[in-house]
Image (cartoon, rainbow, N blue to C red):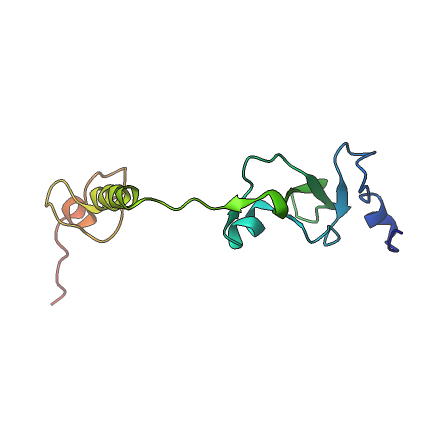
Amino acid sequence: MNPPVSRIKAAFWDPTGARYSIPTWPWRMSPPHLMTLRQLAAEGLRPGGQGVQAQVLWRSRRHGAPGVRAAYLYDVRFALPKRTATPAQLEALAKANAARRTCPDCGLDVGYVLPRRFGVCLDCHYGPAEVAA
């Protein structure tokens, strides 16, 4: 039995997929076993190769983005745990990030990612900061 819904929400009520070709629900009315990618990620899961199982549709109220918006849903029963990085991958990422923070002129790890337009740290680009007397 369908729950009572407003006329606007009823336009997006299609659990069989007859109208939109995949099962469709209004905002906040999808079954609990269907989740978005962000919800799966928050649970430490990934879709695991499954395609989109359903969608949530709603009317956009954003200025400059009128129309209907969609969120695609995946079945949590077919989701797999997220893969974890190996120690070698984590070490490679640490080296790559350190290289992005190391100035080629002064050789210091400046603690921030070097601006691409300068290619060097801000101290090397602008010169040493003048001390106010």
